[in-house]
Length: 276
Image 1: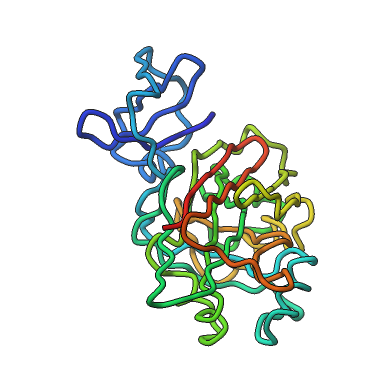
Image 2: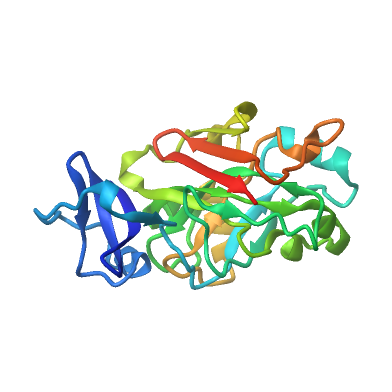
């Protein structure tokens, strides 16, 4: 099932994409409330024409910061280390958080923040969303906690990221979290998923990877994080990006005003944004 958050007739609603339009799920005030309740057993008969709505990010205003993995593809680990000596992965997963005041939807704008950075970069990623609170979850049960998957573009200000070393500031500028276009429920994929990830800028293919290349899989991440902290339902965990980001080129290919970034994940959809 593909779930969306959308704006229609002055209201923010959630619904399911169907072949005949959007089935509004009016019993839920938000996507987070729907996630906590679980996948609906059935859909209403009502349909809304998709052309009559404005699709938002599936979770427009996350209740908590995103949890992200750094250097979770071997090829990206290599290009990151070439770019800056602080960007390394040693014997453990690299986690960082990303502040999201409001996630940018498909078709939305990425602010280039020229007063703050000159090195804006893209990172196409698959993220998963927890469907229930997780604490001390063993790896072999991790799949039971995944509600669904979406696309995140982990936009980054590289010189800010490396200057502060902990990534948080360079990852958290307003508009730096495009997300969407939907959440696809976990039952649509095998576990662990094998999802192709691609990213192009102005039509030039830059990234082309697959989630089977993750160094640390979802089961590793849930077991690792939940060993000592409670992960709340609705938590978004973005699993890292393959090689081909702007900083990996010689010379680097950072984003500039007018660029169009297209992130695609097989079975989920396409997330397209422009830089302003």
